[in-house]
Amino acid sequence: MRIRRHLPPLRLPVREDWERGLARLRTVDRRQAGRWAAAAAGALLAGYLTASLIIFPAPILSRSQEVPRLLALDGAAAREQVAAAGLSLAPDSAETHSAAEPGTVIWQDPPPGVRAPVGARVL
Image 1 (cartoon, rainbow, N blue to C red):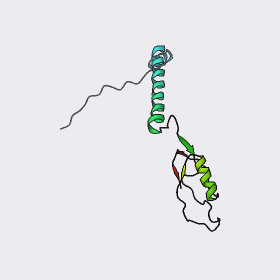
Image 2 (tube, rainbow, N blue to C red; image 1 turned 60 degrees about the vertical axis):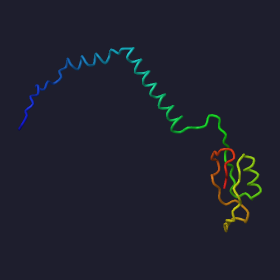
Image 3 (cartoon, one colour; image 1 turned 60 degrees about the horizontal axis):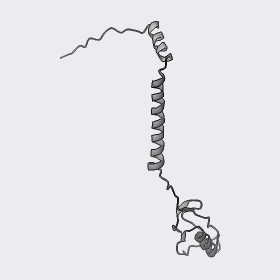
Image 4 (spheres, rainbow, N blue to C red; image 1 turned 30 degrees about the vertical axis):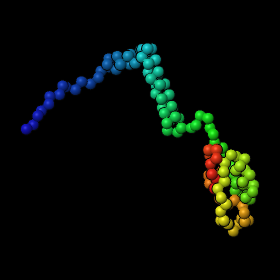
């Protein structure tokens, strides 16, 4: 069974309709514009707070230190720099490299420049 819907005839806008619409756009209600501006500012603030406090939280009172660069240092100098930064050094490993002298640091984790909590272990 077919159902036929009767649509009203299509009415194309005339010049007066366009002019009336433009006149309505030209007269701005200041209260309504203020509400829109306040809503936009509130949405922006809510987004910023969500991003900074929930998605990418950072400690307010940071108890972290920057990991020093230990590469190419000997074991004693590496221990000294790690202790000065307030971090702890993992036990020595016996890995060697053909281009480095024995006893020098050839690998480091976390990498230099990264912030690590005080007392974190550096390999």
